Length: 457
Ligand SMILES: C[S@@+](CC[C@H](N)C(=O)[O-])C[C@H]1O[C@@H](n2cnc3c(N)ncnc32)[C@H](O)[C@@H]1O
Image (cartoon, protein in one colour):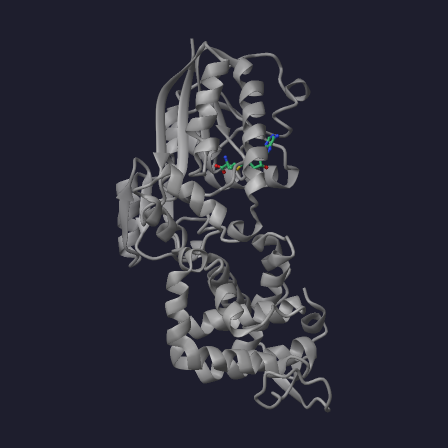
């Protein structure tokens, strides 16, 4: 976590505070002199959560993932962290929008990255809490004081007040700017428009909205209808989706779900639940889950059938999450940290009846769950990912029995990673047949996924 909050003095009550200086005068001119007046920015103050959000956002802008950036706030009070997370998600989901507005209000971005990120965080709060505008501005100025003393408080104050004054005009300009309005990078929009001339606005809108929360009921523990009854008894509204899914009317923490710790349910998007339905495991089948962490699809396969599953992932830390998930759900698989491309290092030479190849991908179908993707992903990444996916397909295909099925999966909506990838593979492998294909586009009900079920002749 940041230096200032880790060095935060403690009040006798134990409440965490950080030292701030009182706001400077309302001016766009940076204040570089004058004595700081210490005050306290309480951990439950809006300014404190804006400060934390700014730190997380600056870390993402510097190339870290949002998960990593938020993990660095681990020592902070839960409420401040939750509020900061909400702001950070909102700002990143609104890719380009805040930056566009700031570009209209400032000649150039501030060189102090955290204060620039603080402006984005405060703008987001001003847009989502217009009723609290004066407090948001005051608290943002207080947070700026914590970051740079008086140096940039005047700028923060001036920029935010200018936004409030010019709000209508600026929001009208946002509507006319493609990136700011669609909240996606221009290269991403170009791909969507090319591939989905009808559907792209719907995909963009879904990509900018908060995602639904869907559960997968563990068929080994409880029937879907019975679990729905448990939810209803707990006052939690939900609707069935697919063969094992229940979509909640509103997201909630998993510890409020009946039987979560006992493994009755997992959280898994309805689109992701299609994998096990399509691969349709049978008892005794020998299945390779080549890219398995954190194990959502591995677990679903095992909930459906007593299969013999080998679950690999190249990331050892993530393989531990597979083990944790399987333990909670009462399921068993062989879990190994291994690079599926280095077949010689882990394969015993016995072919598989079925393979799940859930590829590393752009994650363009789940950007609303990982909104940092819109900031971190580069157009050039797509070509590299397509190359890796092709290499994985080529490495895994020979491990499949004749007559066996391989399910290729991505959480992407980009054609190169999906149908384009499989078209190229089928051209290379004449003994491969495409026996099923589904492109799921994200909407209110589920995320974006692609599946191709391939059979070996
Ligand atoms: C889309 S995620 C898998 C999600 C998982 N199937 C689930 O449903 O929970 C892709 C995974 O591929 C893993 N991965 C990437 N390259 C790999 C490789 N060469 N060998 C094995 N796993 C790899 C990543 O660590 C990541 O966990």
